[in-house]
Length: 234
Image (tube, rainbow, N blue to C red; front, side, top):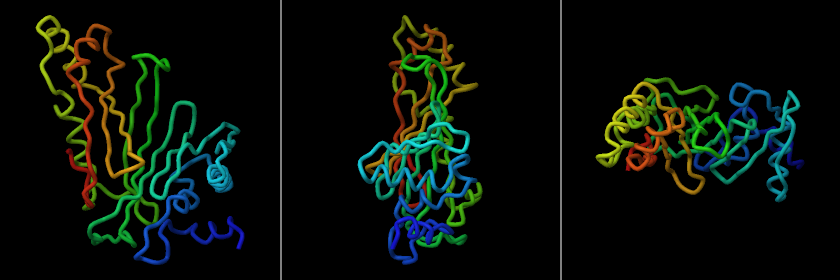
């Protein structure tokens, strides 16, 4: 049977028909509707899958004739470069129990979208991410769903990024930096291809040079691990 016809069979849902089987990210990526991945056609995605599975650069032109690239594809993970300054990561996460709103086969799709700004290769470069979870019908899970982003938001808005006090000579600048970050601090979120972790990194590119230097050694990434229901800080 033609490979593209096989993909077409799965277009209405990203879950394989056997409920006990884990869905494959290649089928998820192929079946995505425009609401999840605007400006990229199904043929674009199928071409990308063909290319990457044949060890070729998976780079095609989208609906507005700009290049998009499937940079990574595993059984449960994909990273798709949607423009020069944006990319999307996707991860299939297993559920320990099927919630009342039913996700079908016991998996949920986590989608992290990141937009980059500032001069590339400099400390002014900023990556700002958002995260959402998708149901089997491609709808975003509501805030009151058993699976929520509450624990993630608590980490990114709290003091979890700060580990040690700054040196005395930098204390005033560090205090000013923390005040600035309290009002606005972009956070980059990164899904791991090899395991069920999510890493959060506070972005400091908007700070003044002195503030950024003062706070640099006080910050650490926050790692969260999927426990079958939520991402929880390690």
